[in-house]
Amino acid sequence: MAARNSILSESNSESRGALIVLEGLDRSGKTSQSSNLLKYLEGLGHSAELWRFPDRSTDVGQMISSYLTNKSQLDDHTVHILFSANRWEKRSLMETKLKSGTTLIVDRYSFFWGGFLAPEDGLLAPDLVLYLDIQPEKAAERAGYGGERYEQLEFQRKVARCYEVLRDASWKIIDACQPMEDIEKQLQEIVLDCVTICQKGKPLSNLWSS
Ligand SMILES: Nc1ncnc2c1ncn2[C@@H]1O[C@H](COP(=O)(O)OP(=O)(O)O)[C@@H](O)[C@H]1O
Ligand SMILES: Cc1cn([C@H]2C[C@H](O)[C@@H](COP(=O)(O)OP(=O)(O)O)O2)c(=O)[nH]c1=O
Image 1 (tube, helix red, strand yellow):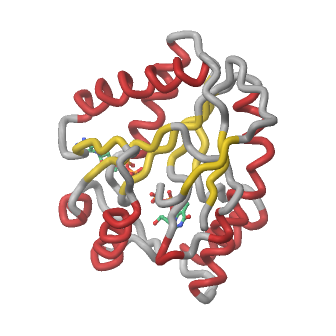
Image 2 (cartoon, helix red, strand yellow):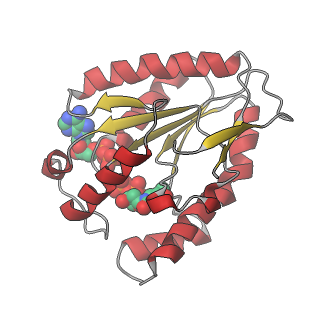
């Protein structure tokens, strides 16, 4: 991600779980592939959970959901801070789960729109970001967008440009237009490597924006 990471030196990194994030435009296949990955890891006997952001189950998540479904109006800065707050309210549980050995597959995590980084400072850094790469026009052809505020081609073009700027060399870029089974196999291989590295003691780190 477009942020440097600071290692959590105090963390007990023995046999911890991995923080694995799937990013991509709406309809790029994140939800399908996240649940495939969960089944895959569980099938191998790993402790794993599927998370997603925004997490609409919390009070903050409900404010976000109401905005996304056009039931409320909020200014852009407010919305971005709510998205960050929604990650912060899950941060401590996230750390507990990872340290107890559970791998988290996260369907979207952090969007760093337009240099708006400060509220993200101190959130846990992903061990792996899988970017499902698709042209906005191709994504729009997939089983219909719902009626949410951001599910529009013009907006998704803007999101795609943001992702181009924000992604860094550590992200694994996967062509999301391949058959689902091919994508699934590629993701499994990358994820298993990451889980193994984390189990062997790679320290947890924070996102650190400056
Ligand atoms: N590789 C693929 N090829 C064709 N269709 C796909 C592929 N991956 C996902 N889809 C379809 O696209 C739609 C959106 O997928 P989904 O996993 O919900 O994406 P997201 O969570 O990124 O919005 C679903 O109808 C899904 O079956
Ligand atoms: C996590 C996050 C999501 N979003 C946007 C991306 C999505 O368009 C929207 C809702 O995300 P999501 O619930 O994942 O929608 P979908 O399942 O349709 O992909 O919120 C942000 O703008 N900032 C954020 O930090």
